[in-house]
Length: 234
Image (cartoon, rainbow, N blue to C red; front, side, top):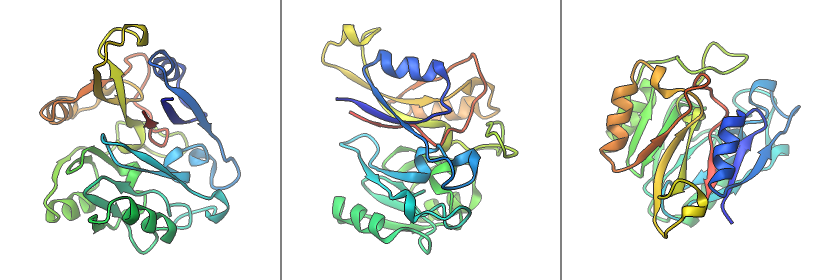
């Protein structure tokens, strides 16, 4: 069964889209574990290993988290089949060991930003979008392709702004109009929570994603909003 881990604060348009395409929603809500704005964010409590090929979820232990930074970012890493990206001095050892067991040849990329998954959207195994210059520098040095975008323009209640990784995720969508039209072909799609077209780097983001033969979906009815990523499995 297709499944998606999603914040309790997710917009109804997003949840409706996902259920239409056959995803069972597992709501994340650990209010009280860390500060309220991120206490329902999947990327605080778990880590998604992989981008498009056979992704898996590493289920974190909420009791290991501390209420505030840096004790609440131990799972907030980006892991593709090529790279493991995080502020490595804070990474949970169990997560790192699981990632290495999942893909033994992972290259470890140490970045200064602890909220790595919030700030960095993997497009494929070696392509990324971020507004964080420290992440951009480290990934470029590791040989990755990076699109650096302008900070802000993404909402996150309780903060001045949110981040590109936290407002997006990866889904496989049937090529027909609904799940009933499924004809055996699934389309890899990067899904954004809100109106991506209002972002000043919209055209660059679209071009960067489309050049990698991926589709894009977003919702024009509400602002682009950080909800701690969209972690789907299929």
